[in-house]
Each structure stands twice: as structure tokens, then as C-alpha cells.
Image (cartoon, rainbow, N blue to C red):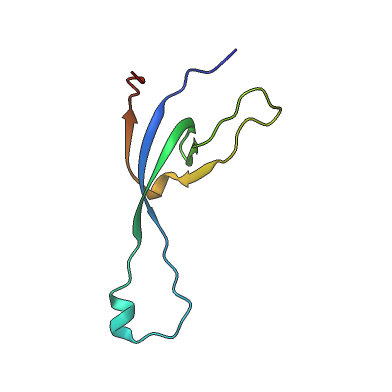
Length: 86
């Protein structure tokens, strides 16, 4: 049985990393970046959300990617709608 799919946009905070020597002024300017991930909402629980951006048909392993986002990093989840091609 196929699961009904919800297409979502997830806005979340991701870490940044700079692997170089810095002054304290440069460090003060560092911050997390806001990321948006789009795809099929696979699951969502008290710890994390899983989004699948790529799905194939008629193969044994149909999921081409999975993005696992810790719940504490999520700023917003928005349901997207597909109106179809004309």
C-alpha cells in the first residue's frame, strides 16, 4: 500500500564552519545559516524530521536521498501544493 505523500518546505538552522584562523571581531560576525529543504515528508517525531527529495519508481531502493533534520533546528514547516502541468 502506498503512503499518502505531503510535499513540504522545511526552514531550518544549520551549522557553519570556518576552518581558518580568525580574529575575535570575525568570530563575533559568525552565525548559523538558514537553509530550506524541499521534498516528501517521510516522518516527523519528537526528535527529528525526515524529508526525501528524490524518489524513483520500479526499483528495489526507490529513495535517492534522505535529509534528517533535528527538531530543535526547525524554524518552520510549510505544506506545498502541486497544481499539475497544463
